[in-house]
Length: 217
Image (cartoon, rainbow, N blue to C red):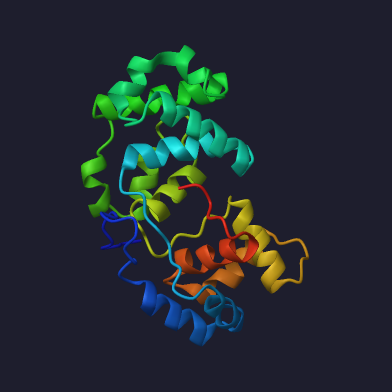
């Protein structure tokens, strides 16, 4: 999947494709036509720093948003700039003291090491297609396909990501399209076929339909 979208340089800026995506989704999908107007001018906000985006996603894995926010706040308190070299200097003991599990501590240190040693090509990601970025990211410990897809959405602002492993997306489809009935991955793919090439935008509105707080970015 090719994309010319660039990373967000201003987290408050509206993605360049947002207005067009809203218009097309509302024209072709009756659920989106009802859902999108409920949120006015709200839009996806990017996180321009790739290391911070990935670290935040690791912290948020398999815990409640409240627990993730608490741990993230503690981490920023001891490491305000959150640069790779500072995280490595901080070390495992200090990271664990932020409420991170041993495994997440190891993951964040490995992420920092990959960035510091330039074993990932963050400067090229904006020019690479989605699957190529995912393939590179999942080589890092603790980076799953879901984590990589969140990165595509929140850092690279890619317009057509469908994170099928995201429980919020599946729940949003269930509640909005299937009256709360269980939804399979094939059901989700079938519904999302109508959203192409704006699956990121549709996913974002389904997240908003469940909770006014955005998924961690």
